[in-house]
Length: 202
Image 1: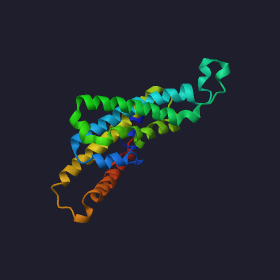
Image 2: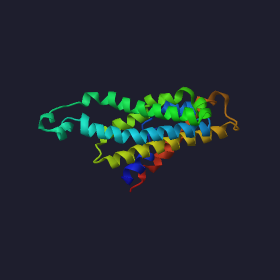
Image 3: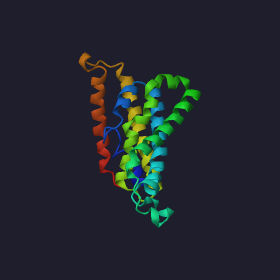
Image 4: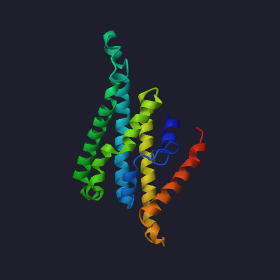
């Protein structure tokens, strides 16, 4: 579990290893406070949805997953519903986050704008559940560890990017590179930095 947790933060970072969630990452990483809010929301949704989708995958959707209901259910295969159910779970948690932020943090809600409800279609979150399918974790504890680690990795990436971009406001950047140009360059350099963790052995 610890290996999965650390690996999902650094070596298999959703942003720097798979480039998932780049649209929100580039659009919201201009301010540390806003980036932290979105990062925490993404981390929460990933931590909750990956283990829930793991349980649904292994006890409802996979071929033979319904065998616990009796022998007559052993041949049922509901895997064709995986995408729809995963998205429904993600959208439900996104709606909860949106209501909480709107009620208790209205200024953050206003600054995030359309990107808060778009967590429901953030490919990093859907990617977490799809990678969970591929990795075939032995139990739900590993799925929780993977979801939490992936969320923390995404949070670290966007907050780090926001901190750098805030500092860049006082830097002398060539005019053609201002805005997204320098953001892409920094993203690539941060990706190289996270690649250096690939030598970690736990």
